[in-house]
Amino acid sequence: MNINLAKFAMKPGLGCLLVTAFVVAFMAGKTPSLHAEDRRPDCTPEKVLTGVRQFFAQTSQEDGIFRPGIDPEYEGMSDCAFSDLAAVTYAVTLHKTFGWQLPYENKTRGFLLARQNEDGSFFNVKGTADPKSPLARLYNTTQGLVALHALGAKPRYDPIGVFNDVLKADYQSLPPYSSSFFPLAFLASGNTFPSEQDRIIRETMVQAEDGCLNNHVAATFHMVHYLRLLHEKPPKAEAMTKRVLRDQKPDGSWLLNPPARDRHATFDAVFILHQLGGNRADCRKAIDKAAQWALKCRNPDGGFGHFEGGTSDADAVYFQVGVLVMSGFLKPADPMPKDPHLLSWGHLMPPLPVRWER
Image 1: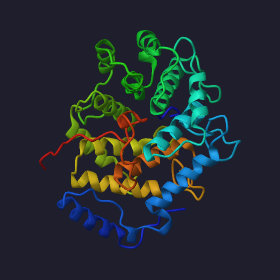
Image 2: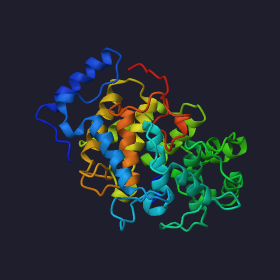
Image 3: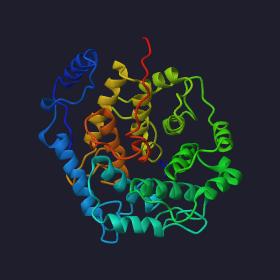
């Protein structure tokens, strides 16, 4: 995640309407969502989902691979630019989220299995990543395991040695947004996360007084995701929540830094608020506002860009749709897929049952 570091128009007075709806829904103990009268017709949940499915239908290939965008020449952005495993994993993730059949599911499964080396690592063929580098081995192997788990398949070779090697020799050189890759990969491969690896990674996750890591929402997200995968509440949760709420921009996003650094920032922030905020009115209001921003990033081709007017990209589709799922605007399949908390970066992870006194 965050490796390279049809417009939704607000009507006059919509902000007041949303706040009112927010209070009513909160008092009723319900999750508020965007009201039908406050959305353009093409932004209904049904039409958004139809568009997303059409985007993936247009980017799928008969060999089971998914391109990062509709244009065959488009090389992707962020994760999709880094590795050609990204678009495939995000396509699998969202198809399983909504109970859709993949266009060529057996071939997608075969593609993923063929991308594993005998040492257990997965590798990219296209993308900017050097497949032999520690970060690429960590990223590709985690993505491969997540996608195979979602497809009900096991890897051909034991991947655990990859993570052991990275932790022994290379972990200190990895970016701070790599922490939750480890427990996610272990759990997706059917393994318990070892206490010694847990200790090594926790020593690097040093929070500031405001609860955040490295003064950046991506690193903070991965810490929260890491601890939630291990069924723990993050320390300094109240301070962290206040900081994240304070950092939201007036447009609803958390794009505070140059785009290359903050492409996933809104998803990251919404995950933190969704996990730690319970049904607090301030958190619900912020998440609902973020959903409005995500809808602004939707394109006529059914996909989403990383920002308004950005090219539709499989990576952006996952993260914007993830925001819409966590906000309650989009509903996952019922019943949900097996192990929903292991589908990519936690958009289906059940939130903590937390209610702090104000």
